Length: 283
Length: 259
Picture 1: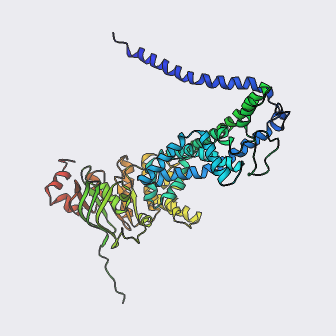
Picture 2: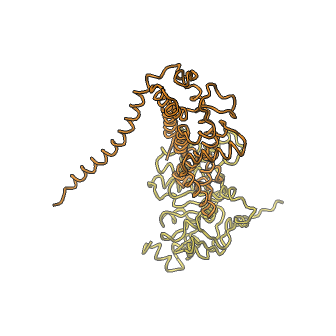
Picture 3: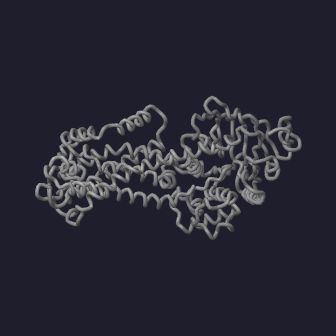
């Protein structure tokens, strides 16, 4: 018997829709659970006070500040290098063994577990370069971990800009760099932004790379300089969830909620900026 | 008494035994061709005969082709354009090109026309304004866009875009203008406007056009070159090529037996 194609279409549509909804369910559950469990802990004091009483009281201010510092540090170390490398690969790199090696290296970097980055940061930045456990060491470690994401999304964003713009630029006497700067980059900016934010979000939420390079177990003060240690939200969350007996569960979920909101705010900001640039995109 | 020298038409560009290969595939073979100043040279021929490649060789855009290889020499005012002391970016402003499909850059109308001049420093906004207006007028599109120069160029119709692209090249103040089927997607009225603009431009430019049909070649071409399968079958005065072609293949092509 031949099934009418109208029926198969309906079944296929149903399955695909279910898959899409199925993806949403865990996301909604996670967010809802954390919000419900953690919202009670949220207060101005929780955000702005030092932790007290073996972290069972007070706030998470130094951890929040530490994560902000680390995110900024990661951005400073990874964006120029990552976007630069992406531009090189998309616009300049000839197809030869050298370029292929770079691409291979990037793919492999993306696959390295984050705890390995942590050990690498410990060895290179903390010990060999004598930065000690510090915001610099942590930012550099997170920055290197973030590079592959930024490089490959930058490259993809650039290569998706029509080739004809490059030809027109050349035909009007423009150099490759003039074309990139005046036309191509602006068109690719939304895509590049996406990659940058994805990378930074991941860095902001990572625990393993900062474990050996910057994160302090308990340091109820703000860092004095970029060569100082600091608390950070993901590690703090790990500590209060596993290392401190008798921890009020509300504080654990409150901390998770703050971290989540921090990351989602970055995401939202990026979406808004992206939308602004996309409206100006013309091809 | 001042001596008056009569300017005889002289070669603006010369192709001497030029061949071009994409990988192992020959696109053009042993082309000898002169382009004179203040004339329109129309290059006709069936598809895949190497017309576009020929144009792209003349301002070194063909250099950008992967695996492209050029033999022979191309001269501009007697100077080999591949000499090491020739700036390729400067060359491309002297030899401008308009493509078959208009590609406005994702910028405003004004920015599109000013794009080329702005790449080469040091012009005031007033100078650029004047240059933009002059170029758009010469390309016969000024009246249609003068009130919306800040609008995105993609908002223009196909015909307007093509004339914008012509204006963009004119703003470079080129000595040679190459046009690759500039009217292929245009309606008859836009085509007429472009052709009129070209006939005016011919007075102080050297123009090489790949027309989109034989009729256009006969309307505006002073001289005609007939290419087939990468071979320059014949070239000469338009009149002669169209009425007394020397090669039977030319005759077959212009009378519409193929192509």
